[in-house]
Length: 113
Length: 197
Image (cartoon, rainbow over all chains, first blue to last red; front, side, top):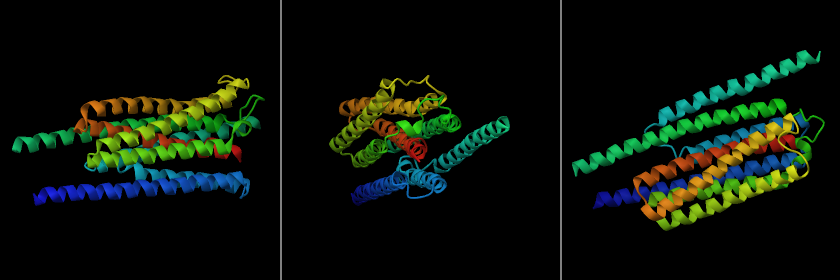
Protein backbone atom coordinates (compact mmCIF):
# COMPACT_ATOMS: atom_id res chain seq x y z
CA UNK A 1 0.00 0.00 0.00
CA UNK A 2 2.68 2.44 1.06
CA UNK A 3 4.77 1.29 -1.90
CA UNK A 4 1.89 2.00 -4.26
CA UNK A 5 1.50 5.41 -2.74
CA UNK A 6 5.19 6.08 -3.30
CA UNK A 7 4.97 5.10 -6.96
CA UNK A 8 1.96 7.35 -7.50
CA UNK A 9 3.75 10.17 -5.75
CA UNK A 10 6.91 9.84 -7.88
CA UNK A 11 4.80 9.62 -11.06
CA UNK A 12 3.13 12.84 -10.04
CA UNK A 13 6.55 14.43 -9.37
CA UNK A 14 7.90 13.50 -12.82
CA UNK A 15 4.76 14.94 -14.38
CA UNK A 16 5.37 18.18 -12.54
CA UNK A 17 9.07 18.47 -13.48
CA UNK A 18 8.22 17.53 -17.06
CA UNK A 19 5.63 20.28 -17.32
CA UNK A 20 8.28 22.69 -15.99
CA UNK A 21 10.82 21.41 -18.51
CA UNK A 22 8.38 21.83 -21.44
CA UNK A 23 7.36 25.29 -20.28
CA UNK A 24 11.00 26.39 -19.89
CA UNK A 25 11.86 25.04 -23.34
CA UNK A 26 8.87 26.81 -24.85
CA UNK A 27 9.61 30.19 -23.23
CA UNK A 28 13.34 30.11 -24.05
CA UNK A 29 12.61 29.07 -27.67
CA UNK A 30 9.97 31.77 -28.09
CA UNK A 31 12.34 34.43 -26.71
CA UNK A 32 15.17 33.30 -29.01
CA UNK A 33 12.81 33.33 -32.02
CA UNK A 34 11.64 36.86 -31.17
CA UNK A 35 15.23 38.05 -30.55
CA UNK A 36 16.38 36.79 -33.95
CA UNK A 37 13.29 38.31 -35.59
CA UNK A 38 13.82 41.78 -34.12
CA UNK A 39 17.56 41.77 -34.88
CA UNK A 40 16.78 41.21 -38.56
CA UNK A 41 13.59 43.28 -38.77
CA UNK A 42 15.19 46.40 -37.28
CA UNK A 43 18.61 45.68 -38.88
CA UNK A 44 20.26 46.23 -35.50
CA UNK A 45 23.69 44.91 -36.55
CA UNK A 46 25.95 45.05 -39.60
CA UNK A 47 25.16 42.49 -42.33
CA UNK A 48 27.98 40.11 -41.40
CA UNK A 49 27.21 40.30 -37.67
CA UNK A 50 23.52 39.65 -38.39
CA UNK A 51 24.33 36.38 -40.21
CA UNK A 52 26.47 35.21 -37.29
CA UNK A 53 23.88 36.29 -34.68
CA UNK A 54 20.96 34.58 -36.45
CA UNK A 55 23.02 31.40 -36.91
CA UNK A 56 24.09 31.39 -33.25
CA UNK A 57 20.51 32.00 -32.01
CA UNK A 58 19.23 29.13 -34.21
CA UNK A 59 21.94 26.83 -32.84
CA UNK A 60 21.10 27.72 -29.21
CA UNK A 61 17.40 27.21 -29.89
CA UNK A 62 18.01 23.78 -31.44
CA UNK A 63 20.10 22.73 -28.42
CA UNK A 64 17.37 24.01 -26.07
CA UNK A 65 14.71 22.00 -27.90
CA UNK A 66 16.85 18.84 -27.86
CA UNK A 67 17.33 19.15 -24.09
CA UNK A 68 13.80 20.23 -23.13
CA UNK A 69 11.58 18.43 -25.65
CA UNK A 70 13.41 15.54 -27.33
CA UNK A 71 15.34 14.21 -24.33
CA UNK A 72 12.21 13.75 -22.25
CA UNK A 73 10.63 11.61 -24.97
CA UNK A 74 13.48 9.15 -25.50
CA UNK A 75 13.77 6.13 -23.20
CA UNK A 76 16.38 6.20 -20.46
CA UNK A 77 17.70 2.63 -20.85
CA UNK A 78 19.09 3.28 -24.32
CA UNK A 79 20.41 6.69 -23.32
CA UNK A 80 24.00 6.04 -24.35
CA UNK A 81 23.09 4.61 -27.75
CA UNK A 82 20.62 7.43 -28.38
CA UNK A 83 23.34 9.99 -27.79
CA UNK A 84 26.00 8.06 -29.71
CA UNK A 85 23.77 7.75 -32.81
CA UNK A 86 22.84 11.42 -32.48
CA UNK A 87 26.49 12.55 -32.32
CA UNK A 88 27.34 10.36 -35.32
CA UNK A 89 24.49 11.99 -37.27
CA UNK A 90 25.76 15.46 -36.37
CA UNK A 91 29.20 14.40 -37.66
CA UNK A 92 27.68 13.21 -40.95
CA UNK A 93 25.70 16.46 -41.29
CA UNK A 94 28.79 18.62 -40.68
CA UNK A 95 30.76 16.71 -43.34
CA UNK A 96 27.80 16.80 -45.76
CA UNK A 97 26.84 20.47 -45.44
CA UNK A 98 30.33 21.85 -44.80
CA UNK A 99 31.83 19.76 -47.60
CA UNK A 100 29.14 20.76 -50.13
CA UNK A 101 29.52 24.45 -49.37
CA UNK A 102 33.33 24.29 -49.43
CA UNK A 103 33.44 22.51 -52.79
CA UNK A 104 30.74 24.61 -54.46
CA UNK A 105 32.18 27.97 -53.37
CA UNK A 106 35.67 26.94 -54.50
CA UNK A 107 34.21 25.81 -57.82
CA UNK A 108 32.38 29.11 -58.20
CA UNK A 109 35.55 31.05 -57.39
CA UNK A 110 37.77 29.09 -59.78
CA UNK A 111 35.26 29.17 -62.64
CA UNK A 112 34.74 32.90 -62.17
CA UNK A 113 38.41 33.67 -62.80
CA UNK B 1 2.71 -12.30 -9.94
CA UNK B 2 6.15 -13.36 -11.20
CA UNK B 3 4.89 -13.95 -14.73
CA UNK B 4 3.08 -10.67 -14.59
CA UNK B 5 6.28 -8.81 -13.64
CA UNK B 6 8.19 -10.68 -16.34
CA UNK B 7 5.59 -9.88 -18.99
CA UNK B 8 5.62 -6.27 -17.94
CA UNK B 9 9.40 -6.18 -18.08
CA UNK B 10 9.44 -7.85 -21.47
CA UNK B 11 6.95 -5.39 -22.88
CA UNK B 12 8.84 -2.46 -21.50
CA UNK B 13 11.99 -3.76 -23.16
CA UNK B 14 10.38 -4.10 -26.62
CA UNK B 15 8.73 -0.67 -26.40
CA UNK B 16 12.09 0.97 -25.66
CA UNK B 17 13.48 -0.86 -28.72
CA UNK B 18 10.65 0.54 -30.85
CA UNK B 19 11.39 4.06 -29.64
CA UNK B 20 15.11 3.59 -30.26
CA UNK B 21 14.42 2.33 -33.80
CA UNK B 22 12.19 5.31 -34.46
CA UNK B 23 14.93 7.59 -33.14
CA UNK B 24 17.33 6.08 -35.73
CA UNK B 25 14.76 6.84 -38.47
CA UNK B 26 14.53 10.44 -37.27
CA UNK B 27 18.31 10.80 -37.40
CA UNK B 28 18.34 9.62 -41.03
CA UNK B 29 15.54 12.08 -41.78
CA UNK B 30 17.80 14.78 -40.29
CA UNK B 31 20.39 13.84 -42.92
CA UNK B 32 17.77 14.17 -45.70
CA UNK B 33 17.01 17.70 -44.55
CA UNK B 34 20.73 18.49 -44.18
CA UNK B 35 21.25 17.63 -47.87
CA UNK B 36 18.37 19.88 -48.87
CA UNK B 37 19.76 22.70 -46.71
CA UNK B 38 23.13 22.27 -48.43
CA UNK B 39 21.41 22.38 -51.85
CA UNK B 40 19.49 25.51 -50.84
CA UNK B 41 22.65 27.21 -49.53
CA UNK B 42 24.44 26.52 -52.81
CA UNK B 43 21.54 27.43 -55.15
CA UNK B 44 19.68 30.27 -53.40
CA UNK B 45 21.41 33.03 -55.40
CA UNK B 46 20.67 31.42 -58.79
CA UNK B 47 17.38 33.18 -59.46
CA UNK B 48 17.58 33.13 -63.28
CA UNK B 49 16.67 36.82 -63.39
CA UNK B 50 13.44 36.20 -61.43
CA UNK B 51 12.52 36.85 -57.83
CA UNK B 52 14.85 35.94 -54.99
CA UNK B 53 14.11 35.07 -51.38
CA UNK B 54 14.30 38.75 -50.40
CA UNK B 55 11.35 39.57 -52.71
CA UNK B 56 9.01 36.89 -51.39
CA UNK B 57 9.74 36.79 -47.66
CA UNK B 58 7.09 38.26 -45.35
CA UNK B 59 8.78 38.27 -41.93
CA UNK B 60 5.80 38.98 -39.57
CA UNK B 61 3.81 36.25 -41.37
CA UNK B 62 6.59 33.67 -40.92
CA UNK B 63 7.12 34.76 -37.29
CA UNK B 64 3.44 34.01 -36.65
CA UNK B 65 3.87 30.59 -38.28
CA UNK B 66 6.94 29.87 -36.11
CA UNK B 67 5.24 30.80 -32.84
CA UNK B 68 2.13 28.74 -33.71
CA UNK B 69 4.26 25.69 -34.51
CA UNK B 70 6.36 26.15 -31.36
CA UNK B 71 3.18 26.31 -29.24
CA UNK B 72 2.04 23.02 -30.79
CA UNK B 73 5.21 21.38 -29.42
CA UNK B 74 4.33 22.64 -25.93
CA UNK B 75 0.73 21.41 -26.15
CA UNK B 76 1.97 17.99 -27.32
CA UNK B 77 4.30 17.90 -24.31
CA UNK B 78 1.35 18.63 -22.03
CA UNK B 79 -0.52 15.73 -23.67
CA UNK B 80 2.43 13.44 -22.82
CA UNK B 81 2.40 14.66 -19.19
CA UNK B 82 -1.36 13.92 -18.97
CA UNK B 83 -0.70 10.50 -20.52
CA UNK B 84 1.83 9.65 -17.78
CA UNK B 85 -0.82 10.55 -15.19
CA UNK B 86 -3.40 8.40 -17.01
CA UNK B 87 -5.85 11.27 -17.61
CA UNK B 88 -7.34 10.23 -20.94
CA UNK B 89 -9.63 13.24 -21.30
CA UNK B 90 -6.76 15.69 -20.80
CA UNK B 91 -4.62 13.78 -23.31
CA UNK B 92 -7.37 14.09 -25.91
CA UNK B 93 -7.87 17.81 -25.19
CA UNK B 94 -4.17 18.61 -25.62
CA UNK B 95 -3.94 16.44 -28.76
CA UNK B 96 -6.87 18.34 -30.28
CA UNK B 97 -5.13 21.65 -29.45
CA UNK B 98 -1.90 20.36 -31.04
CA UNK B 99 -3.81 19.16 -34.11
CA UNK B 100 -5.52 22.53 -34.61
CA UNK B 101 -2.22 24.43 -34.21
CA UNK B 102 -0.49 22.08 -36.68
CA UNK B 103 -3.35 22.44 -39.16
CA UNK B 104 -3.14 26.25 -38.87
CA UNK B 105 0.59 26.08 -39.57
CA UNK B 106 0.05 23.99 -42.71
CA UNK B 107 -2.77 26.30 -43.82
CA UNK B 108 -0.53 29.37 -43.49
CA UNK B 109 2.23 27.65 -45.45
CA UNK B 110 -0.21 26.60 -48.16
CA UNK B 111 -1.48 30.20 -48.45
CA UNK B 112 2.10 31.47 -48.76
CA UNK B 113 2.91 28.97 -51.52
CA UNK B 114 -0.39 29.65 -53.31
CA UNK B 115 0.40 33.37 -53.39
CA UNK B 116 3.81 32.73 -54.95
CA UNK B 117 2.33 30.42 -57.58
CA UNK B 118 -0.48 32.90 -58.35
CA UNK B 119 2.15 35.53 -59.13
CA UNK B 120 3.41 33.30 -61.93
CA UNK B 121 6.34 31.58 -60.22
CA UNK B 122 6.74 27.87 -59.82
CA UNK B 123 9.07 25.10 -58.80
CA UNK B 124 10.56 25.25 -62.31
CA UNK B 125 11.16 29.03 -62.46
CA UNK B 126 14.74 28.93 -61.16
CA UNK B 127 17.23 26.92 -59.14
CA UNK B 128 16.31 29.12 -56.19
CA UNK B 129 12.60 28.26 -56.41
CA UNK B 130 13.38 24.54 -56.91
CA UNK B 131 15.49 24.35 -53.76
CA UNK B 132 13.11 26.62 -51.80
CA UNK B 133 9.96 24.62 -52.59
CA UNK B 134 11.74 21.28 -52.04
CA UNK B 135 13.14 22.22 -48.64
CA UNK B 136 10.15 24.09 -47.18
CA UNK B 137 7.61 21.87 -48.98
CA UNK B 138 9.14 18.64 -47.68
CA UNK B 139 8.85 20.01 -44.14
CA UNK B 140 5.20 20.83 -44.87
CA UNK B 141 4.59 17.29 -46.15
CA UNK B 142 6.14 15.92 -42.96
CA UNK B 143 3.76 18.06 -40.88
CA UNK B 144 0.76 16.79 -42.91
CA UNK B 145 1.89 13.18 -42.30
CA UNK B 146 2.30 14.01 -38.60
CA UNK B 147 -1.26 15.39 -38.53
CA UNK B 148 -2.69 12.25 -40.18
CA UNK B 149 -0.78 10.12 -37.69
CA UNK B 150 -2.12 12.27 -34.83
CA UNK B 151 -5.70 11.83 -36.08
CA UNK B 152 -5.23 8.04 -36.19
CA UNK B 153 -3.73 8.01 -32.69
CA UNK B 154 -6.68 10.06 -31.38
CA UNK B 155 -9.16 7.57 -32.87
CA UNK B 156 -7.18 4.64 -31.42
CA UNK B 157 -7.07 6.33 -28.01
CA UNK B 158 -10.87 6.68 -27.87
CA UNK B 159 -11.21 3.00 -28.81
CA UNK B 160 -8.36 1.37 -26.84
CA UNK B 161 -7.89 3.86 -23.95
CA UNK B 162 -4.37 4.19 -22.48
CA UNK B 163 -2.37 0.98 -23.06
CA UNK B 164 1.41 0.42 -23.14
CA UNK B 165 1.19 0.14 -26.95
CA UNK B 166 -0.56 3.50 -27.19
CA UNK B 167 2.09 5.03 -24.91
CA UNK B 168 4.84 3.82 -27.26
CA UNK B 169 2.98 5.23 -30.28
CA UNK B 170 2.53 8.59 -28.61
CA UNK B 171 6.21 8.67 -27.61
CA UNK B 172 7.23 8.08 -31.27
CA UNK B 173 4.82 10.74 -32.54
CA UNK B 174 6.21 13.11 -29.90
CA UNK B 175 9.75 12.54 -31.15
CA UNK B 176 8.57 13.15 -34.73
CA UNK B 177 6.82 16.38 -33.76
CA UNK B 178 9.87 17.69 -31.84
CA UNK B 179 12.06 16.81 -34.82
CA UNK B 180 9.80 18.86 -37.13
CA UNK B 181 10.07 21.80 -34.73
CA UNK B 182 13.87 21.67 -34.76
CA UNK B 183 13.94 21.54 -38.58
CA UNK B 184 11.57 24.53 -38.64
CA UNK B 185 13.95 26.55 -36.41
CA UNK B 186 16.60 26.15 -39.11
CA UNK B 187 14.18 26.89 -41.98
CA UNK B 188 12.99 30.04 -40.19
CA UNK B 189 16.55 31.19 -39.45
CA UNK B 190 18.43 30.15 -42.59
CA UNK B 191 15.79 30.53 -45.32
CA UNK B 192 13.59 33.36 -44.05
CA UNK B 193 15.62 35.47 -41.58
CA UNK B 194 18.94 35.23 -43.42
CA UNK B 195 17.03 35.75 -46.67
CA UNK B 196 15.63 39.04 -45.37
CA UNK B 197 18.99 40.45 -44.23
